[in-house]
Image 1 (cartoon, rainbow, N blue to C red):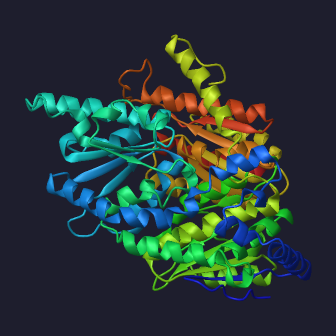
Image 2: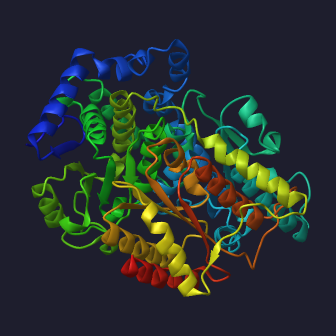
Image 3: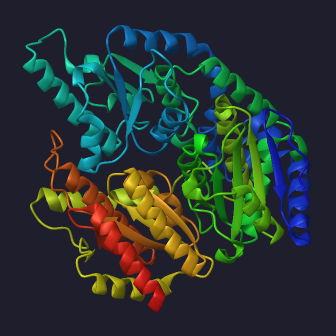
Length: 581
């Protein structure tokens, strides 16, 4: 059966594949219309859509500002354009945004999707505490020609503030070397994006920064793409913010319709929720290359919003597409196609639409989203936010909280305390890669813990590079093809602010391969008694402890001083282990 195309800026087709699923979807649609979910949630901002608990309702009411953002920020675009022009006029050649999760993924998406217009300011995103990533992002830039953006909703995000401290010292040293003294100071080269009052006041030197962009506090981090979080870097990149927000407003209006047949967000949210409840909870994205950066953003949105209380939707981004035989019965495929594109990156596969037709014919649901132009990203932000929020109604969870995120942070702080006292952190042991036979044996021993219809999560606490992306793609493909399990890949610690909630709070079906490395070129964090290398190590150990606390299988592997060689050794050892398993 084919779902009627939704009215509004974009279209959605759904090919479910079986009569029982059709019946479940029809029942969900009828309930959504009968209970008027869309108008209550989107039109009236009514928290009772999600919960009958008054305490939960009050909390949700403080998290629905994202529905107003495309309207509210339409009045700020002239000011943002003037800010971006002033940055260019004052000689800044690059901007670096330091943030994590909801504070970094939308800026990274915009920076990758949109080619910087002539005369605009390129934007880099720093969201890794690996010292190699810090070096790769900052070392080739002149600190006094670089605008640094501190992005943290709470004002206390450890990673964001570590990046700020490091760049502050770099700017101060550069000014001193140039003989530049007051009134010029490091804060002249920094701005901050945060919430008002206590949040922004928690950011060091907040009263010395050149500008503060204060978001409405009723917008959660993962729903903040169309606030200053995305719009400040968007302005620097030279985006047409008026058009971006106009498309977003059209989508908000479309998503207020009660009828799923004409409501893009409701139709998608119902499909996601119903399919997940029927066991098809691995939402597998196949995205055209120009929009590939949409994957990590929507991955965070879905995983952190739905993965709690033992349920959730597992977003699968970047996994190469395979033949029907490689998949179990837990998949849903999402094809996001951009008009005029040559298709997904070759690493995803060739002839993907023909392959998806085969998968659909074999009974795997395929959702198809057509995007007319890149600027429709504004509408897509809204469509997927609404869909994810209403999927939460189907699943019976609050999509705006993250009850398990703090657990890993608590364990990380305990590990850091061990480092600060000069000791070693318990639980920091990891299997090495030098002895490939021993590595293969460890992998073979761990593989039986893969749950039926579970997923394998590769957690790479190393700096991201194209070569490592390719190596991890080969490793995940080995796992998928030999086990028929869905695979995910996340770079740490970024994924802790993204899929980390799903790992601990969702269905207990994850199998975790944690990859760490040595830090031959470590970097100090000014004002701290630990380094960036120790911080990322603590985050990895803290997360492993948290997974183990939830009785989830974790295998830690140390890739050594050369992560690329370590990944090659891991690939060989995994192939051997799977052959023997």
